[in-house]
Image: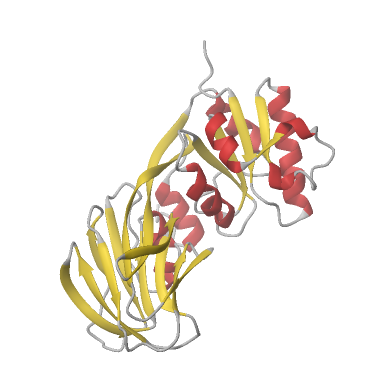
Length: 294
């Protein structure tokens, strides 16, 4: 019987020696199980004991691999997702970070759960991304994708900006605040949550808009249909340069008078989990919610 995954990619820039060891253990175990294994070429110098023929770029891995195993925290998963979402590849995470909302596998005992996944026993989810574009004088000046959120904010700390929010070209509201978090359901447990935004079930087709320190008590988060197109018209009276931050990793410069367009990406992330995965267990565990009474 054909295996669900034949070619496997190991991705994720390690931050410490333990994470490096996890990469080695994964590579040795997978090759021992008979899989064709390739590694993110950004790790070539770190993993210099592995034959160079097993390294490839992230784009090449996306084109050729069936499964990507991302080692690290959610930050590594976010960086990989923005690239891998363009390809037909499944993604699973080994948690070597702190919170690990997106990385399920225990680095100390990944073999049992991963073996089940490799045999086809897993849960699959489709997570959508956002596209963020900065428009200036009718032209797209810069753009990028975000799995968690796209955030309009000032280039300097604690500096209020003014902007108008349109939803499908219909004016919604104007605001004076430190910015706006536009979040996917995946990102609802990230920066958006810290800003007082709602937790959205990952299966929802919805986008949340969360004001950052608004200069009015009536301003509240709003959730809109995922197919709506968000336009932020930045006031020409703002001072200095603003930014749109994608997943806190990519920054797009925004000038006074620019428009920021944010909408659902045509690409999606095929995220897989072990069979015993429960989103609500993850929430209880990561957010410290109470367990059952009896």
